[in-house]
Image (cartoon, rainbow, N blue to C red; front, side, top):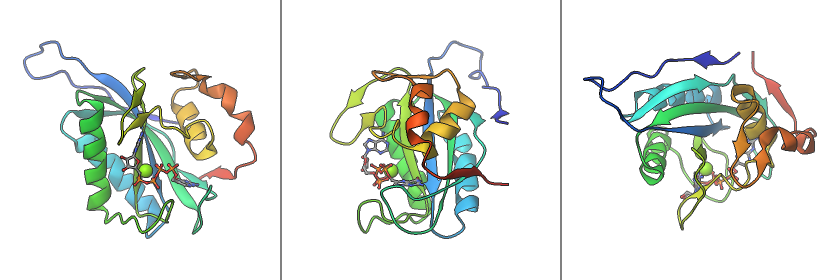
Length: 175
Ligand code: A4P
Ligand code: MG
């Protein structure tokens, strides 16, 4: 079950260009579930973004990381922001949750990854899209496929084709 929300046209009804993007959300410090829920609200409230759909919440085993189980989810947004501006906005939401980065893959109050930005392929010093590990993680693939079962990842093909390879990673729906 995903929650669908409608996009509101700009005031005046004029045409406007937007891009469909997918955001991965994760947390495993503090009240992880509440933090992911709050981040979804903040995504909806971001100027230039409309939350189109959100996956259910999943409890997942840490991958390449230690600490507690994670709460993960994926959101689909429509945005008029360019990818770099969107990433900066995501970092702002992380900071609002007191995100600290003591070492790579450290436990975190909130992590927001830009998984997909339309069909763009981006490689800059600060942004790689599609997210480089998108096909290797059940905590991304499962909620992404819940929202978009037929989605294609630019340069990699159908996301569904990668599901079997991550079937050994523990992931369960949060109830
Ligand atoms: N960056 C480049 N491309 C992107 C992008 N597409 N989206 C840069 C977001 N950020 C991007 O990110 C490090 C740098 O990546 C940023 O400065 C940004 O400019 P970060 O958020 O500081 O660090 P991170 O999250 O530890 O790095 P990364 O590479 O996103 O980590 P991963 O690979 O996403 O792994 N296990 C479970 N079960 N659930 C999880 O959510 N997350 C991780 C993090 C490990 N294991 C996990 C989970
Ligand atoms: Mg990150």
